[in-house]
Length: 376
Image 1 (cartoon, one colour):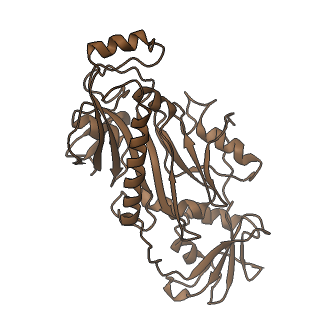
Image 2 (cartoon, rainbow, N blue to C red):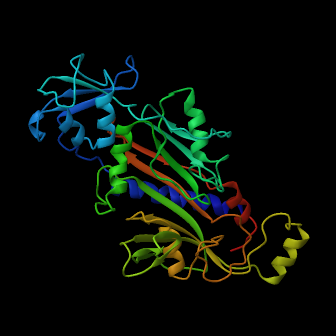
């Protein structure tokens, strides 16, 4: 049975490489008036070598910052801090004029550091540089602090880790995963790194060809067997009750567009009675109970990023996620303490190096244990 998960992993890796070749071929960088680089000897200052100011609406610091999608809030903070803006080593303001050949430096840590409860726990770090921290989140761990998960959450663990590295650290999670979902989480260490990827996340997903797009591949165990690859194009609506958004979403013509591509990896059938008897003799009762209904392993890629999109779409076609306590339409005879969903692979183009960052994680151990009990 160990070969099942190995075969699946090989398929995933090969398919992922194919997707990368299609979606992440070498990109042409858009025209810019500067080249950005960090200045290690000056803490938190970003250096811009000004090349062509003619592409700016006005040749001032303000319009350069806006061209980089720096928020008005961050710009306001820069105005309040002495020495936060420098041109050719001299203090400047957002109104200061720029010319070709100038060297502009701005303070990246102009915001108040994140104040949250620091949480214990060892991070599974997949990638780290001056701009990004990328980790592998386990199942049953909230991404950010909430009233129910204040003392144990990924955000608190990250803040504790970053405390010794950067006391002005602001927690900026680019792809917050549900508590039940495992997989890759990207954290931006500064505002430029955040803006480089966050704009694609916030643009209502209308530009899937965006150079800054984060390509993601999810894997899920879903109820029932699916026999062909499908695309689910179904708008998702957030239910609002007296001005308060409910957690559960629904498919509705009044919702926002949502598109999910599903590829079938493997179908699994229930064990027959003799197999169940053999399982009992082998004393497998200590692990998850053997399901009595068929299920399947699928790979999912998204053109849009709606809340609960995968869960809503799978439920809408009658193949709810195993372990989903919100969207399962029919009881699934599977004992699971979480939804069987993982963000297994991601890729994006690093805004500073222009190189592709491609990461993939193994299936969680509990998936191996579960699949190892079954016969196809």
